[in-house]
Length: 33
Image (tube, rainbow, N blue to C red):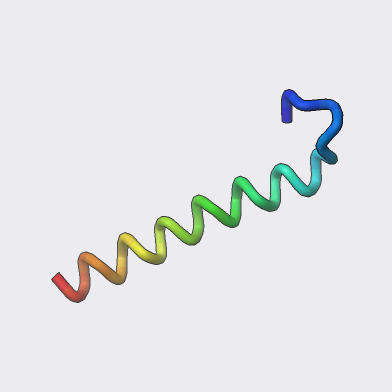
């Protein structure tokens, strides 16, 4: 992360979790659609 006040591990987990979440939602939408 570029922000020194935010722990790297937390930033990475949040970023990765967001990407995974979006991917799952996208897949579900595509399957249902």
